[in-house]
Length: 278
Ligand code: AMP
Image 1: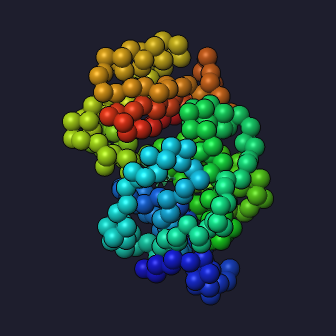
Image 2 (image 1 turned 60 degrees about the vertical axis):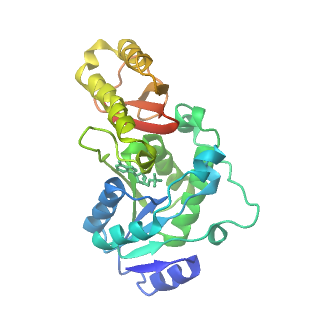
Image 3 (image 1 turned 90 degrees about the vertical axis):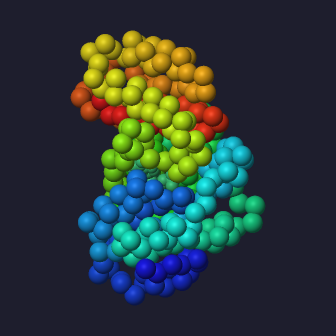
């Protein structure tokens, strides 16, 4: 496995392949878990070369504490990537991607970026798209893999490559979960064992929606709100039912598999998100 700290070295290495190899790219912020590794495995299946970036992107954090507390486990991450046969890791310092004082670009993603994360993490998608645009321009992958866990991000990145007129295909990958149903997340490391147990409520609510779709959006939303009100250390930020095409809230179901329910909640100060397609 090759590890590059600078885009110059990485591009030099990639230029040797010309157009002869397909490149799969998995951008991450490190603290890798089975969800990330599943993306690499998908890349290995579909592409000749798999590249994983590990970069905690400062411009996508609207909360400085969240950035400061973001877990950093680089040595273990590299061992995990080696085990799943990742070919290349790009792990740059901030100044390899940003000039001094550079801030996020301002994008127009229309309705895709207004609800949910767009509402509760102002500036997040501009920061995320800024770094993804830079990474796609450096690597020019054949396919870039993104988790469905960050559903709005996945649809925004699909829009971003259209705006960039990039030929990169954006592929969404199913959410990997703990046995309890809790979505794997780097932030789970910040939860105590008992908090982790309580955090399965998010998946239980999503599952309830899937099994009780006929109750309709309003009743399901009320059900979720009631479940969270019963919890002492768990605060619901939003439970939103949206159309996949627009990422805007719905009152009635769109066609089968064109709807999603997304939940964001704080457990003991840790922000957790998850969703399911309905
Ligand atoms: P992050 O390091 O949190 O920025 O995530 C990097 C990529 O991994 C993103 O495309 C995420 O959507 C994806 N990802 C994170 N958690 C999971 C999961 N539990 N299952 C599948 N993909 C995930």
